Length: 225
Image (cartoon, rainbow, N blue to C red; front, side, top):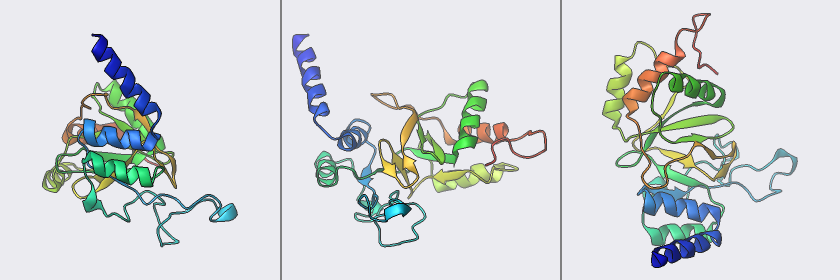
């Protein structure tokens, strides 16, 4: 027992000395086996003066500042501890990108205001949700891996799907906490379990979101922007 407590104490001490980004990236890669890679990140402070910090990529009109792969590319995502340590040792503030699909989690995202309403609706319906990633503009509900074929079948079976929904599946990516991107700080609205995060089926969440979004008094969507 003393040996176990001693190991846990040493582990906590090591984590205290590590940057938050590295610690979180290692948890994703080694504890949860989620493939990750560093995002491009933001310009150095003061790079744009009063205009704020933009994306560190060469595109001055980047639509998702800091929140996308650049160098390395998405195919470099890995669960290898040595690679993850090397990346975030050299770029300690780089956003953490989860490569979605395959054996990794996928996600459905919608605007932040609509998502907050959706979580209340889904909780009321008794739908069990997994981790939820939040930025000031959008929230992402993480789900079990699905193929593009499965997603196509699910969407085809629906009479209507909220236009504000986005899907992060095979070949995609998702920024996870504690990253900072152009949209602001990324955080857990609902954090994963520390050992093995549970993920709901995409069909269950999609059906529930469609049901929760219908029936507004004016005939529109309760989960609109």
